[in-house]
Image 1 (cartoon, rainbow, N blue to C red):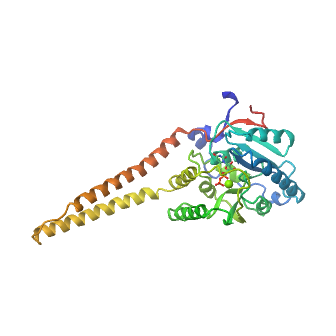
Image 2 (image 1 turned 90 degrees about the vertical axis):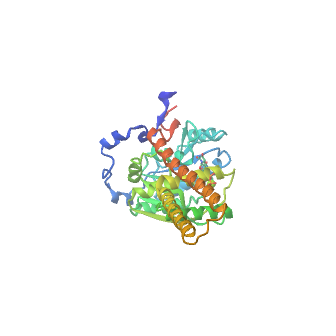
Image 3 (image 1 turned 135 degrees about the vertical axis):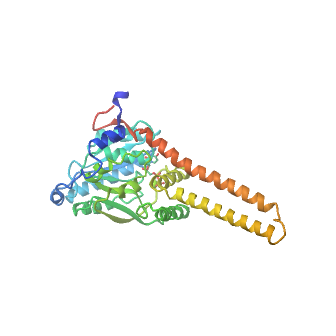
Length: 355
Ligand code: UDP
Ligand code: MG
């Protein structure tokens, strides 16, 4: 079994080797930009799937119809395909994917050895497919797959990254809409460059994918990593639909996890805020000391109160624990990064006969 495993190529390579190979900077020059507009490009539509037996048949139907249309319009080549990445599902998802791949060359299936989470599954699809363009979209097709034609047109016009942006979120619950939008704003304040209302529905060119492979971090937050690639990028607006079948595979806990990942992987602002808070409290304490001195010496009275002693004590205790927690979070991140564990592991690939 162990020889059959194929890990995320870059993740398995040590950092020193990658640096020595010179892939860190300036090694991905633009090639043949003009050829984009001439021949149809090969595109791989990557679909992460976790317990999606209810959504899959519908997604397969819609995406194969879309591929036919893209080919007809000369936007996608005959070799274009849909790649379903099974992220360790426990239902019939993999059997469905394997059956689709066996019966139709438009479909490819990759099964990961276990559940790596949405970000890991998306990364696996992006790195394992070698098409000219990679498009990532969720299996529930909440993101409008009809935008893919526009994305390919933008690619042909010279864009390397095309981001799908949710213009209309009325299909989301008030809670989800409110928290998601507030989160994008907080990320902006903390200096993390993300596109407002863009999740993981995007097109990336081969060049952009190759550059992304140089980002070896284990703590994945793709929508923060992609802007770091640079290159020419643009957005395509769409209205987010309701999930057609099954239920969300992103419960509140996982969503909060990803949100926290986004903040702590891309910003050290919380550490700065904590330091600022510490300094502010220390200054406040100094001022209070001065005041107590004044009351004692000049005013002749005495510092009254039990509350003024006990309340700050608890407050400072709380702030200290909070600061330790934030520090611990970053130390934990460093710990996980130093392990350099693979970010995904492929168990079966229907195209490569890895099984
Ligand atoms: N997903 C995954 N691994 C996970 C959780 C989710 O591959 O651990 C996939 C899921 O199958 C879907 C996509 O990620 O294709 C987004 O999940 P979902 O639609 O449930 O999230 P929501 O739209 O509710 O945020
Ligand atoms: Mg969804």
